[in-house]
Image 1 (cartoon, rainbow, N blue to C red):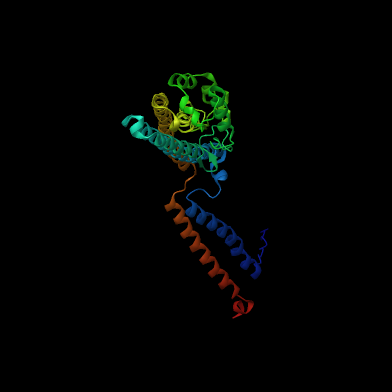
Image 2 (cartoon, rainbow, N blue to C red):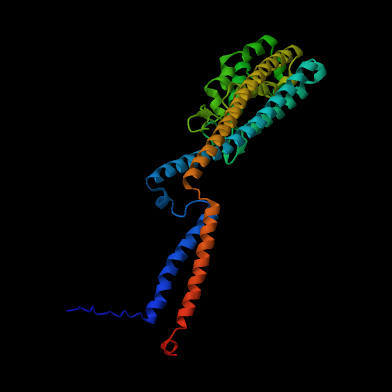
Length: 354
């Protein structure tokens, strides 16, 4: 007896034909968007999906890159502060050297004691202005106390002026503007200028009448492993010496004194100015060294960034040519899908019955 297998008939609906290209079209559109994004960014659209367990390595590299960027950006501010500070120090040293040279060029009588006094007063005001300079909202010579104006103006009624007036009156029994200062001998003036009562106004606790700067300078992180001092302050010995020299010349009544007493004052001022200019050079050298260290640190970090970028590229970058090929292929497939869908929509039962 022969067995005959029954034949089954499969039915395909028009709706099924229409929906078949749609499902593929959604996937291709997503793939096309992904490929276009990779062309635009140059890296995988989904880095985590592509790298898998190596994703952590990429994150670590990017964090390291971000840290280097932050330090280099901070070094820009550091370099600006150092540059402005260097300019201010140049101005201070130039004024001191010019005044010192003027004192060396002529004896007191030929020079004019009034000129010595007036020039010193102008230099003291200029010194105060330079020490009160700011950059980026921070006072350059304030040490770590960057929000506080470091030096008070030496004017009538100020604590510094009152302290000098008090020391002079206590020593000589007259004020600096009294004509009786003519009676002050050279030896008495020398003793006064070397006395603790006067010098402590500049070298000791009395300097607080002049300055509210912090003794500690700003420390900046110039690389991931290096921190250095990148500022100076108004409490440096050079600044105190300059203030002392200009005060001696401008506010101890030199214009009304006898010649030999004037000479004692001028000799003292020249000695202090010589020491102060040498101290300024040392400060400038220290800040110059800091500038060099910042530049060298930036150079090293730039090289590190390039190396990190290469590693990140090896992990995350896509092949532009391959991505472009995928875009072209997907675009072609999508166009074909649209065309096929349009053709399927034109199918009807009447077409089969003809």
